[in-house]
Length: 267
Image 1 (tube, helix red, strand yellow):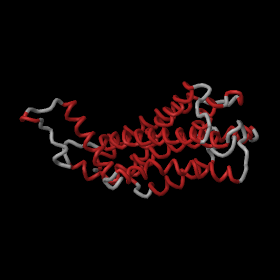
Image 2: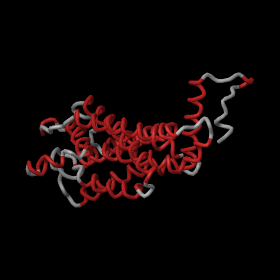
Image 3: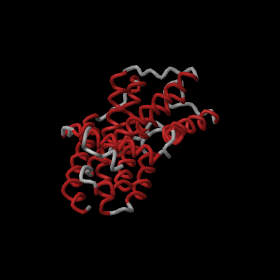
């Protein structure tokens, strides 16, 4: 790792500050993938396939039980459009926190800052999630299901919002776990509650209005409806786009401030 983090170019010429920083991030990403995935292609494949297996297991259970989708003609497409954005958000927000816990000793290198660990893990998770999304789309096509949304722009922005929300909440988690390491388990339990209440296997908008209003405060539910609105525009889902974006940006801002001025000083 020390050799990877060197700031001297070939021939003894020093790198520019930007080049040095990019080399540090690149080295952290490579180390992250090697240590987490066992240094093999199969190890990386397991990490990519795990959320996909989660989604297809969910699809399989409801398909074999002949439970129809609340909307649309394809149960597989209905569950996939709900599960993918929620899992993207949850995986990024959780893995960013784990990255800091596992790789904190690397901050003893003068080239490595706490933010670098966060950025490297975010980039790895985005690439991994994109590969997983391509795999899910490929399987749906192989099953004869058309995965193309009615409104591609809304679908893409929904996935981008899931990434942004995952980063924002993940940085807040980094700040929290810096004081309470047990939050790693606490957040896993909290994620289960958010997952169940996100509307992956049902349509929250079909619930009584008094219940639905309170459920809308769950940003994961908003992500589900954001992406589904691109596939089922006739349902008339009411997505609060500003709420999701502001929740993500506020979380990111608060998290970065805490990481910079509080957590970093404790390391």
